[in-house]
Image 1 (cartoon, rainbow, N blue to C red):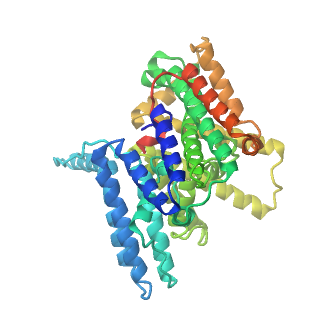
Image 2: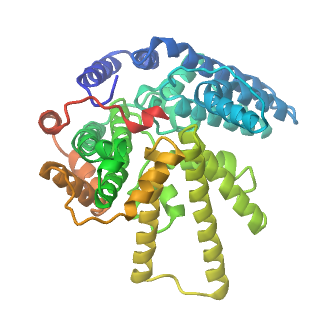
Image 3: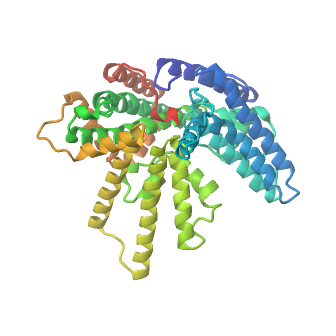
Length: 475
């Protein structure tokens, strides 16, 4: 059930009406049932996989929580983590691991034939697996302090883990952020309706009016057959893809946050104008914020963060960025993607330390401008690894960027207008969305209904006409 379809709109509306029409004690039950039905609508065969992750996380949390009187139970945490990671490794990484093992065997003149999974990836497995791992680590940390931080109710935990607005592609939510809101369902405030509807409309517009038309009109034709296009056209497609993946993923997040608000629940923000960043480190503080925070809190800090020597800090940065890369997909493209981002962040940290030691002044407007330009184009060029299937395809596409032909890019005026509008919106003042939400909160219900209807009508007229899945569903 795709977010940007009539099916989801009807499903959301019915669930919201039933939720607020039921007695308070029944609402958690309804949310849980609705969330399981939502996931089952994708593929019933993968529902047991998600339920297994839920069951292991809940039982593991209860097990860890009851051992709070003892120390040295790291092996228990490791055992539960291993069980939690098994489905993710099996479905997402095993085929790639097996392929690389066979390649190593071939180099050693050995013929190894390892079995393959050869099954579609369960939708959202990276997101709900990381959410479950974060919960368990938090419970284990509470146990070390003598507290039982586990959730005693299996159904409440199931609802937390499967909450349908953020189930498939985030934001990745921590237990302390969502479980209290599920434990004591909040009252719906009038301002949340306006802010929620506006946020859903904004997400729909990003997906249907920017991301999908760019994908069909500029991106797919060129990335599918780059040899048929000029270097300038490849550059345009690369800028378009950089915009598309942001509009697509942040559009999903907008719909998720807006949908949750209709239940009186607040989800964390996941984006903050990432292409305004003046360093790669800042980019990751603005892009997919909940994943970056997850990696920081559950991997970078436990490795020692920046508390050790410089070499140890550089090592930790490289490890965490490679993990971020591989989280996105099982391929050498994503390994290289993580290595490149990690390498640049190491370079930025080294340069910043040298500047601090020498007492250099903070950069002014011109210094920030060229830092922004370098950061932006690094991010744009690294997107080649995101969009192509393998390193050879990435190299072929990148090689063609240097070919300059005196030919105008062959795109329709409508797609050019969408391309320009999308970038103008992204680089508009950051305070505008907050002001729009504040304005929406003061308006009447009829205006919210009118805005939603107008957005739907515009989407029907301007959208591609195809139901294209969100990019991050594949992760």
